[in-house]
Length: 136
Image (cartoon, rainbow, N blue to C red; front, side, top):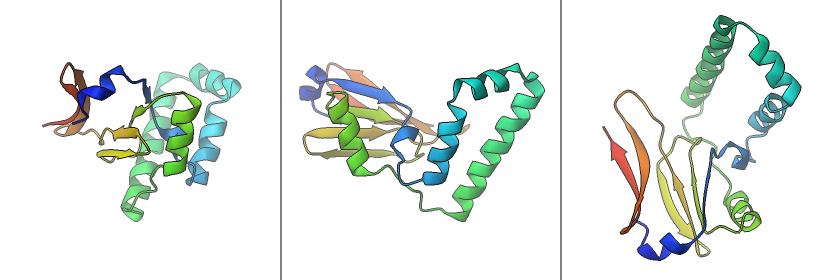
């Protein structure tokens, strides 16, 4: 639970993948995949091919997780730099598939866990504060 004081702070919501600066292989993939011409070419493919490619990428990601169960997490400096650049005090993201709530240097980082058919987490913001909650 984040106290009510954070309700008056700037909160930034992002996917989180750009903050995994230690995972150079993923950052190289991300740099290529975000090029407009690559996206345009991919979207021009038939849907069955795009789904096949998406399944292959997900399978590769799951295989890597099995091979390396201790995940490369977002680097704390990247979080602080991102918050400073965006003049925010709270960062909410996913991507690392870990459920994390931490506070450091007067800022807070909240990470949604991975989602499956019967598990996951979400962030609730209400008059009482900011909450990281599980659903099952």
